[in-house]
Amino acid sequence: MNNFNEEKAREGARLLLEAVGRDPGERSLSDTWMRRVPAMLETLTEGRRPEEKPTMRTFETETDSLVVKTGIPLYSLCEHHLLPFHGVAHVAYRPEESMVGLSKLARYVRWRSRRLTTQEALTNDIATGLADEIDAACVAVEITATHMCEAMRGVEMSTATTTRETVGELSTTDREQFRESIHRADAANDHF
Image (cartoon, rainbow, N blue to C red; front, side, top):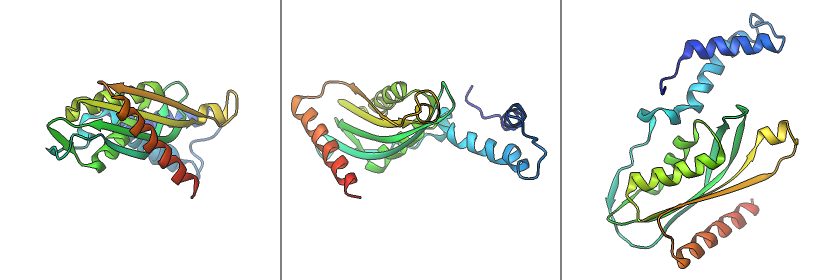
């Protein structure tokens, strides 16, 4: 089911407040379950709605070189705990007959991320989805993320998890270029 049901989200938020011993009728909580939580859930699950997908307009290929976009901010929700995970995605693709604007790669990652999922599934969904969308010869995706389900409960530690997915065949040179681009992006972020 891809449609968002605001009424059910409102009722669910109200029931959760009651489950933790809070009165949904409290003045400070009425907007929480009536408006804020449903609006938040609608935004954070828009990746399940095809009509929210960014338009992936393509144009004639200007190069046969690997195109790399690093450091794309990523925010998603763990489907096991309903808690966020966040980090960065790095995307590379080798165009065939058409290319896509670089901003579209970031928009696509954001759209795919806005759903209940796991990091492993998200990495695969971005790689396979982009390969289909832009008809690329190969696509590589790497995601490094911190999971609030680990940090706030469970082991109660904030660690990073890295997942990778490739669709098509990356040459050794492509792999090295992708790794070096990620390394440069990580080094640049360490300076801020």
